[in-house]
Image (cartoon, rainbow, N blue to C red):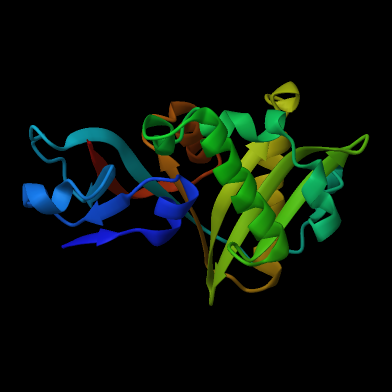
Length: 220
């Protein structure tokens, strides 16, 4: 089945589609600029569809805890007035690993993730967002989506000047503690397969690989 993705088409100013298989009539395919497919297994590439990246889901059980060890950093919930503080330096590292960069421009990708962060702060996409601020600048940010007894990380960003300082690790631990207080059972996160650094980061934090699927793209 081939269907038009309305948000992506509008945001990226192109006809963006999604299909559950490669067998699409040329006349239908040519109505689009880009068509994506996601499979649970690696498929043989065709003349039309080529492998782009893998989609890896990690998961971790959450323990109920009253620990405050993450309070080494003054993390807090993000609010609407924080939106103007989101900056390109914070968001850019996400963009270079995004599969969308292969179908649109860097600036469009940057705008996409900025909008995602804005909506997370407002609770209109992801449900909550938390951050660390230093001298009026956001240096770490995470968004969380809540689903009954489970939660997932949407965005996790650390300013390049503060990476390798343990800030990202502490922020994830902080989220785990918050969710543990609420009686949540599991925390999951999705990364791009090519983002080796992110995969290793979550594995060090005790996340285990739950699912691997694969993106294939057709481009006009």
